[in-house]
View (cartoon, rainbow, N blue to C red):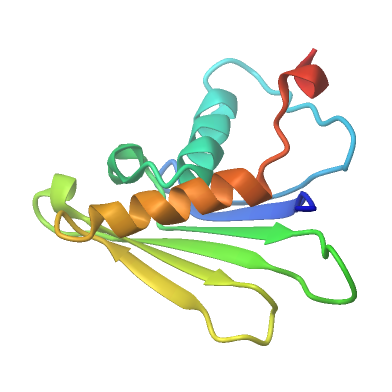
Length: 141
């Protein structure tokens, strides 16, 4: 039986070009509250794009690095995902680098998104979507 990995926290460096933010999540229900235009929807879209390996959306998003930490499933293993945007000119050709570590001490699996290896990034996206997300419609009601 596959066990879900819940998101514990997310850190974003260079969010909207200038802010560094960290968000900690509860395992049940979470609310993001803020004034209009403060980036609530942008944050949710960035998380979705990161977990779905939507490199096209990530290239267009304004960030430098995303770190996603998952709650340990068993023992003290704490899986994490790091996404780094390596800017190039023109920006549509920026490289999106995924680094996934199953434990904090393990070596990362590194995949760089380019036009040539997009199928590997999509495969990683399917894997991450299947084991790391818990955004069911039942919970959002």
